[in-house]
Length: 616
Image 1 (tube, rainbow, N blue to C red):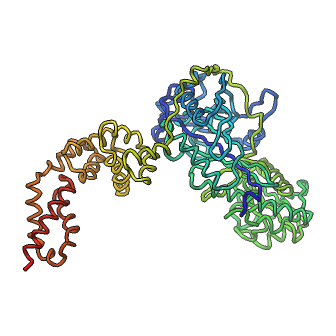
Image 2 (image 1 turned 90 degrees about the vertical axis):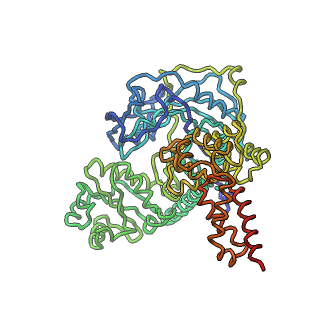
Image 3 (image 1 turned 30 degrees about the horizontal axis):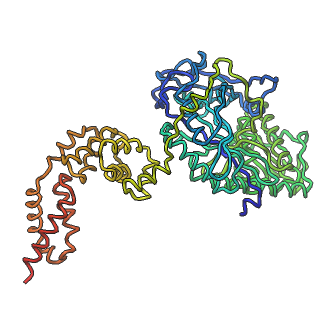
């Protein structure tokens, strides 16, 4: 597919949690908790508020159709600010400094006077019904010639536990939002730019790591299409696939639009029918439980509602997503019926009631109340009408493998209004000039390669590793770079694959182990055994005692001679090729108490002696 020919235009919004001591507008720690530890809970209903111009944001209006009751978990590490029962504190200065650092790394211009705004959010993720956000800098540059439009500092949303239950431990963690211009034209370019921006963020050493700490939103459109925002792409390697699938979706929807127009397709909301009585004796579990069932005729839509527009997604899926906003489980349509307990006879009856033709597609929707069914009917009508025009502008969520589903309409300007409880912050020349730019990770990797002789692949992995601060601390304390790098990247990985909880090993423990190796207290071959013991709760000193004291050279020679004597027949059969297998036997005997180079030297010498003595 020629994406440039198709007019692909894409931009990225990256949301990254900052690794600060306190939250953005209170003094609570930025620590995530196990929900089982929550110490309290409360409930809340959220309503949309009008902007300064008296308008209500369209995305908020859509959300209000759900009429939801939200439940929140509180902890001994959260406070009244998260509960929205106390005014916010001043903007976190540490978080602001991190944002200024990142802004300088992208060659941006800082905002001289930073004002906090309220961004309307009533999906339950904020107890207040809004998210606080502040514009920090504008006009940055990217390596592909594109631009960073803005950097904002905002509060992270509450973590969804299940359905409408949220946990407040995450709410308020400082979050940087970086928005690019629509400067990317291929799926691969979008992924490359996201990867570069992530590398810049990690270069500060002040961002949180792990699943859920960074999210990418991708804005995509093609020629003749519409801007669509895809939220919450967490896996970097999936970004290109998400873009490809969205292009496919828009392309297919445009093809469907053209076919609908060719058929002179139409939909009239007033022509829907209440068919509840037709399904009184149905075998469909969903329809049997419904209080109200409506049927809507989509004239000229036959065969197109069931047409695939993304892997495992159809136009019917799009229409169903809209109906689900009202709380229904989905829809049925005649492109897929009879099925799901609905018989061919029941389908024929509905067709007769609606006077539907073969070229028409009927949508069935069931609600637990008149209000819910009517809401869903209106949503079906709106999405079907949009299909006649092409592609609606909307916000979508990513599904597994990279396909997407409708979330809500794109928000408008009415979403933002000033925050009256937070004072503005001035950024003067002295503060901006005092911002120091850290070394980029890609440059750091090149330095590791040149200065320490670490191979390129390892150097790149090390620069991106969460244990980079540990490696740099080890170098300052005189540890051999290759020893530290091998332990971090290789030994730790092998232990993790064994099921060892290496998260239990502190940085200080790693350093103590390395210093013990450097001082000859334990051989480097003993590091895995030491770390296993430390991960299970032992101190490094106790672990060394359990492994036993270092073995002298004389003792090693004695062990080697004994093993050679016991395996003389094997040695005669294998000759010098016996060295490898015997090395494993000796190392198992000394249990990492001797350096492998010493063992290899002694074993090689004694093996040659044994072979020479047996030679006639």
